[in-house]
Amino acid sequence: MHKKFTGVLAATAVAAVTLSGPAVSSAQAESASDSGVTIAKSSIKWGTCTSARLQQAGAQCAKVAVPLDWSKPRGKKIKIAISRKKHTVKASKYQGVMLVNPGGPGGSGLSLSLLQGAVPEYKGQDVGGAYDWIGFDPRGVGESEPAVSCDPSWAGYNRPRYEPTSATPYRTYTKRDPWPAITNAYTNACKANNSKGILRHLTTKDVAKDMNLIRQRLGASKINYYGFSYGTYLGQVFASMFPKQVRRMVFDGTVDPRGVWYEANLSQDTAFDRNINIWFKWVAKHDSTYHLGKTGAAVRNLYYATRNRLYANPVTAPGGVHGTSDKLGGSEWTDAFLYAGYYESTWTDLANTFSSFVNNNDVAALEASYLDASGFGDDNGYAVYLGVQCTDTSWPKSWKKWRADNQRIARKDPFLTWSNAWYNESCRHWPAPSRTPKKIDGSKVKSVLMLNETLDAATPYAGSLQVRKLFPNASLVATKGGTTHSNSLNGYACVDNKIARYLYDGKLPKRAKGNRADAYCKAIPQPRPEPVTGSTQLQAQSQKKLTVLEQVRLEQQKIAAPR
Image 1 (cartoon, rainbow, N blue to C red):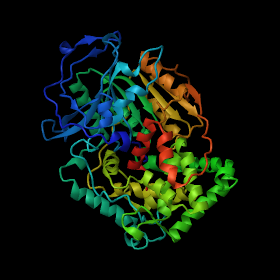
Image 2: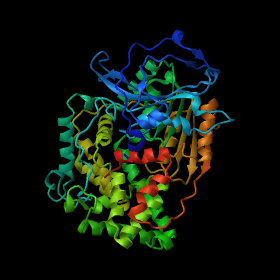
Image 3: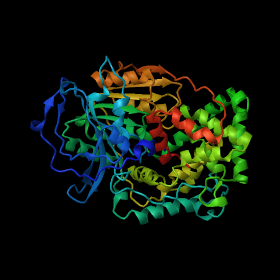
Image 4: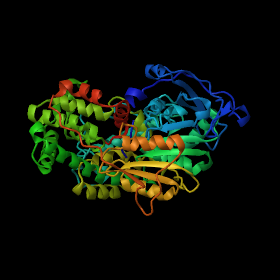
C-alpha cells in the first residue's frame, strides 16, 4: 500500500531523554478548562529538540520507554521519540492532547506537532492553540529506538523490469525476472540486521498500545487524534481497543479495514490507473504548453512507449554515484510519475519532467523526479512499512495466486500494478510471524470527523463509506472529484473550516441517512499549466509551490511508494 511522510520536517532528531515516574492522577492536574479537560502534569521529562525547525517553533522533545513485547509489560523496553507543541490558550480554553500520525506505515510523525499552526481560527479563536500537539515516531521509525533498517541500498538505479517476462514458476525464472531474488535478499537482510526482536513486534496493535502508554505518561484521561492515510487505520484500531480513551478524532484518507493488506494493494492498483489517466487528459488539455499529445489516449500511448524505450535502452543517470553504470530505465520512469496519482499539486512539475525528457532529452529532469519519489539511501520507512503490514495479518503464500491476481489487474490497469506487487511481495516470506488483526468496532466512540476526496487512489472512497458504517457517530466530508490523497489542513477552506469547527466545539456535520457522505465540498480547481523549464528549475519550483505540510507528505511518500 502507498503511504505518507520522512525528510524535510520529519528528519528531526530528538534529545535522548527518557520518561520517569508513573502516570499522574487527576489529583495532580493543574486546572480544568471550560470544556472539562484538565491540564495534567506530564511525567515525561521534556528536553530540547535537536531539530532546528522544532526548536524554532518552541517544541519540546523526549523519548518514552514502552515494552518491546506487550505480552511481557515488565520485560525489555524500547523508546518512542515524541515531540510536543504546547497549547497557547489560557487554561479555561484548553482542549487536551492531540496525537498525530502521518501514515505509512513507517512514516515519521515527530515533526507533526507543528500542525498546531495549520488549523484555521474559528470565531476568532486559536483552535490549534487549544491543544497540546504530540508528534511521534512509531516504534521502529526514525528517532525511536531501535530504528529498523534492512538494506539502505534498496532504492537505487538499474531497477529491473517490473512486469514479469517469464511464464515459469516463481522459483525458476529469477535469471530472466530478477525481482524474486531481490525481494528474497531484502527479507534475508531484514532478518540478519534486526536481531533485537523488533520485527516480531511492529503490528498496528503494538503501536496503539504505545499510544495509550504515551497518553498515560502525558497524564491525559483521553486523547484527541489526527490520522492521515494509514494513520486512520491506526486510529480505528486504537478506538476499537481503547474507546473510553477517545475524545475527538479526525481521519483523513480512510483505510478500508476489510482489505488489510493484500486486497488493499490490489484496490489501489485500479484506482491509481484511473488517476494517471485523469492526469494524461489534463496534460493533453494543455498540449500547447507540454507538446505531448492532444488527447489523453495520445499522451498515455507516449508515456508507455517512452517507458518501453527506456527498458530497451536505459539512459545514464547524470547524478549517479557509480558513473556510467547507473541507469534510468522503464522502472525508474514508472516511479518518477508516481506522485501524479497522489497529488494534483505535482502535476505541473511532472508534466515538465515528461515534456523535458521527451522533447529536449533532459535526463536530469527525469532523474530529479525519480529521486524525489524513490527515497534513495534510506530504507527505514520501507522496512517498517513491511514490518507492520506483513505482520498485521496473514498474506497469501501462493505465488500462483499473486501472479494471477496481478496479471488480471495489469491487463487493464498497468500503471503501478507490478511495481506495487514487488514492493509488497516480501510479505510472502517475511521473517516474522503474522498476527490476527483487531476487529474494528467504532460503536462506542462518540465522535469522529472523516475526510476523503472521492477519487483518492491511495485510500479509495469506498473505504470511508465502510468505516462510516462501523463508526455510527462519525460524519464524513467528501470532496467530489478530487484525486489528491489526505489533503486536509492545506488551505482549502471548505474542508479546513469544518475541521476547525469540529476541533473548536465538537460539532459534526449532521449525519445523513444512507450509504453516503454527510457533507460535500467541491473539488479544488485543477492546476494551471506552467512553462516547461527543464531540470534547472524543477526542484526549486517544487519547493517554492508546496506548503510545509505538502513538503512533509511528499518526503514521506518516498517511504512507501511502490518502486
